[in-house]
Image (cartoon, rainbow, N blue to C red; front, side, top):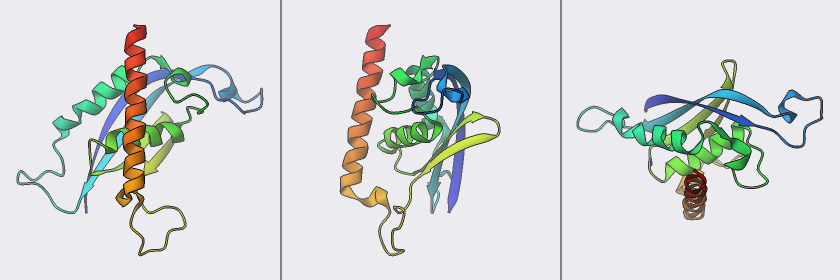
Length: 160
């Protein structure tokens, strides 16, 4: 299996709900986030690539327009805590519609911490079960999530 990874950065604020008042993440604060996008393939294309890195410029555009210098509580779906775990999942679902070889998205808030959402079999799945990305229902859900994120992007552009 071949794997490539490209890294992107953005700065944003957030505030996590449901934590004790003395928890630092319960207060408004910000991070310089690092997002890593990983693609995998069992073979290479005619040039010798898993995927052309240049085509991943769309990821930078998406991050810059949707997440960079934003308050993430206003970007994610209402009621969702903008944790690194949730951001990794949202970014994965949005990008998977465009990049079928996408295998993982990692989001880091600090140099020592990161969260990852990885395509794979559902937790507790038997070894012979298909990965979740092969499920038509989950593929449909990924398209719906991508449409929701597109709506949030459009709303954000309307506010500019």
